[in-house]
View: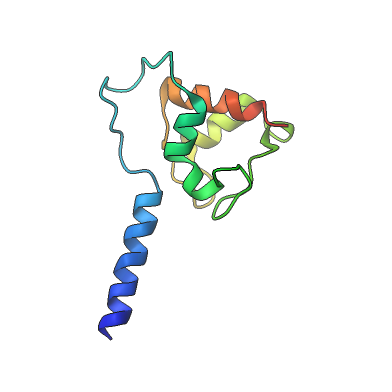
Amino acid sequence: MKKKLLALLMGTSLVLAACGGGGGDEAGGGDTAGADPEKLYNQKCSSCHGGDLEGGVGPKLSDVGSRLSQEDIEKVIAEGQGSMPPKLLEGDDASAVAEWLANKK
């Protein structure tokens, strides 16, 4: 029984950690004109969509630009979709990652 409980707690911790956590923006969120979209993706998105954009828990994004526009991608980031929580990235960070992903065709 203890092993099952420990496994459940560890699994839950892993899932919660993979979802990105809260907004740890030092600047208060917004003015990140020099944001590196690939770095942001790796920090907030790769745990579900894969470091190589080939998917995992979330769908593959290696060709997402052929299916969705930058605006559509920003909407998914803002509102979430399926099991993806909303607002993992916001403001300029979300725009930078959406633009980067829109170029993946």
